[in-house]
Image 1 (cartoon, rainbow, N blue to C red):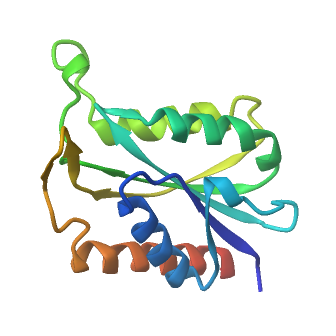
Image 2: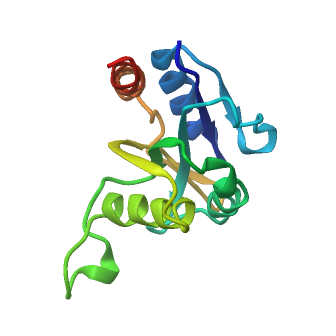
Length: 164
């Protein structure tokens, strides 16, 4: 069996829930950014984080920078959670309109593939989360059971790619 692992950065627990479902679909373990295992034996590393104001979280960017050298010659799949839909990012409205997803995945890829030695798969996953701001919460109930099943299906899809 090909070895794979799911790594994530989570603040409210949404990204953790999604990571666990992706790992379940792949039939592997998931780890928080604070407990990253030795990546030497893994062929596929699935990386996830969350978005804040249309950008990767500071903690997410930091953990990706910290492990990027360990990703050399690995296959990498990306996922993220966001408090809103994948809409046009406000900074790109008047120029070349780009979605938050496009910018997020581009940012994650730029961080981990700085030396052009990582194979970043085109298979990617995005899931809506909930907002917790100033003591108020919005979008409660995300990720939904349906979204978590989609995350599991994403893991199964990655497992199929590896076994092919």
